[in-house]
Length: 187
Image (cartoon, rainbow, N blue to C red; front, side, top):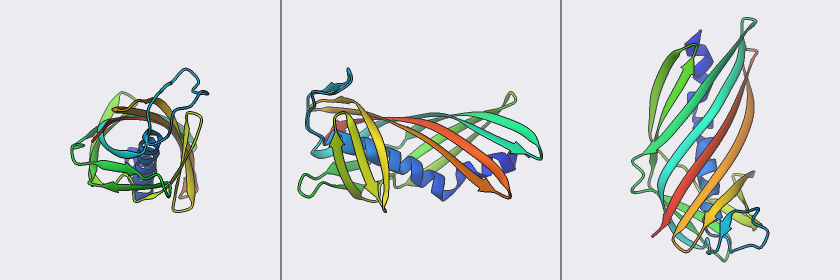
């Protein structure tokens, strides 16, 4: 029963969502400063190349299996980030990435922890970006993702992505809520 519950989280589609979140965070780094920053520090320009230095994920998964509600907390930490680069181009406003990242995910269910490492996945395949205040909008494969820019200076970018998704598998609904925070350093 636990394997069924966790199975949808490990899909390529789920990792692509996480990758899109990271991509959106990267786009926020290329945005210009804004007066409407909601208290966030935005004093730099996002245009340029950024290296991922930190990647943290927190979330919750809720499902009902055979009529029994199940809830699990999830935490994740990125590793092998040194060669992960994201470039925000100005004209046109496109995003490019190179390298891969890895993430260690830990699920907690009824006092039991399950840890999985997902290695060497691309966190961004490319797309376009738009900045609206402290919100970075990344469009990849026709899908838009909004990213909050927490910090954008000449040397540092910190972004946060909120995501909620419900998937149906074998007539069971699984709702995932995630917060992804990523830090970047200008190359």
